[in-house]
Amino acid sequence: MASVRCDYVTEITPAKESWDVVVQVIRLWFVSNMNSKQKYYVMEMVLMGEKGDNIQASVKKNLLSRFDNKIREGIVYNFKYFGVAANTGVYRTIKHQFKLNLQNPTVVTEVGAD
Image 1 (cartoon, rainbow, N blue to C red):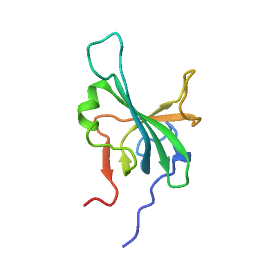
Image 2: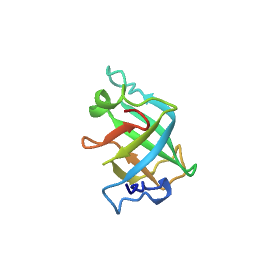
Image 3: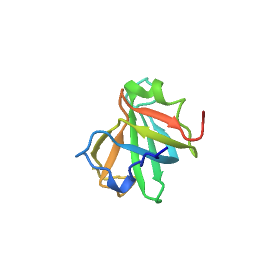
């Protein structure tokens, strides 16, 4: 059986829509919106690829209930079907030019869990 090659974090750009990466969640935190009664506004993560490269990932508030109990810090996951956007802003967590945005079609599977 032939193995399927996953993409590397260093290869990620908005030019492609069907990325497939294996990453470890090395940091995970929730950002609160001080102007709202809602507990959390966004979930942020730092992901490390198999070559040791890092990229930031975000889950917006409308999808928090789908991902907040599924993704844990320190675990290795396979991420598929996510959006890629420019990593802009004054306070960038990671130097990678792009970041991942988890969306409705995003599939997150724990590696090694069957």
